[in-house]
Image 1 (spheres, rainbow, N blue to C red):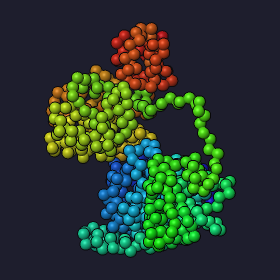
Image 2 (image 1 turned 90 degrees about the vertical axis):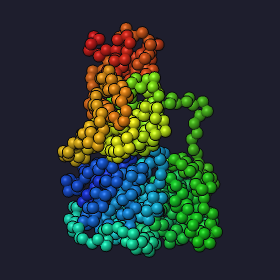
Image 3 (image 1 turned 135 degrees about the vertical axis):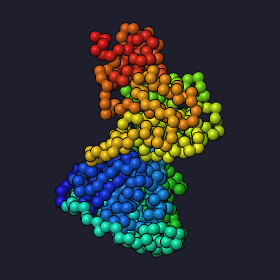
Image 4 (image 1 turned 180 degrees about the horizontal axis):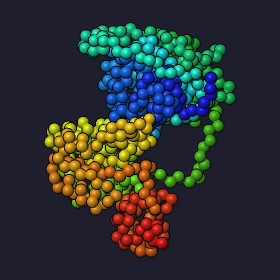
Length: 601
């Protein structure tokens, strides 16, 4: 049995491969992205792997394969589960044939997400089992177990790693890898696979009978652990990564509380929890993000009339939002157990660290796109609806070109709603190329059908940049490196009836501004596609530098906000190690002081 040093996402992926997964589908989203990429790496060609256009499509592709008896894996982040929720809720009723694991990575913090939603609650809402690993090692083992439980109970199963589990690394004892199993094939059975109201009712009854059985099964599950010292009156209940924080916080102390580690929050392992609560007077619950285990314990105490005080998020004993840390857990345990932790404090005279908000990269073509639209809309009443992606950073000064941002694809439809209420405003809707395919096309069809008056700005940098440069339908590449069919954004726009479609390079500033102005003079649905590759894919060169012609107007600093441009002694200065030669600053310099490095020598 080899020992491998793996990231948590790699460990989960290897677990799926060793479980004999036949098909893996997903949509990239931090912190889940590397799971699917690692399946492609570890699968050795024996596993079909695809980046689907969105999470809904991924889950439905996997459902079809599962109906044929294949083992399937679906990957996404927590907000992606919202997109997949329609098929998920019905699939929970219909069930599966081949084992299906849906790996949904939660993002406490949040570090790179719109929400801090907790997938454990979604599991309860969907009435599905959920596994909550506390380490990369458990992510590997629980992936294997999740497939077994999925087939045992003919149900999809959720695996919920959080950011620190996904991106943490550890040594993992890997089992001998098994090859993907050959599926039996699809057996026609409309009574099982076609959902009707009567079928849904009958299946709902089955689920309600089944889940207590799974909860009883989970009470003996190997990663649901109970450590109970003699005479302990206080207990700690943990779930997910909080178990690791609590173990580290308790190490080296004299405290011996009872400790319940909950690896499967739903269906809840009641029998094990009752054994934990027996003889206790007080319990502190440590979990990210919502009080899932805390509420289960409170409910259990009420049902069994147990005189145990359960503390946690609901009474303010621990923080109600954000990530935990060893330090935050020590503070909670110190108060709960009367421990005197030596938690270092920052000195009173510690200087304030400079604020470093996220910004668009130096040379990013999106900066040029935003700037072109800003110039074209100058002096007009305009609203700029943004979307999810690295281009959301266009909201920052000095660009200030993102007025709204809700969820993927919503910029297009929010602009339509605004147009209906303020028809005298120019409504711009920004969307990226990957997002266009994931959730934008529906909004375009809605706009054309309902004769909206909006200007669609597609920011096409030829990659899914925010999550690590994954391919998408516009690139024509698959995650395995094989060629797929490249789909043209322009042809899609034209096919659904957008009469005005222009494609320009945003770094050609005059041409870009002209295209937007032309669109602004028209009415109805019109689109400008700004196409220029992400600098991580294609870096222009050489860098630019500033000559003695600089008059110190600082227009390049004030209007672009490029991190490669700074101010030195009242004049602009370019950091050559950051500049990628996009030429935008040179195009707006009124003195002609910014030139390519080789031109100025």
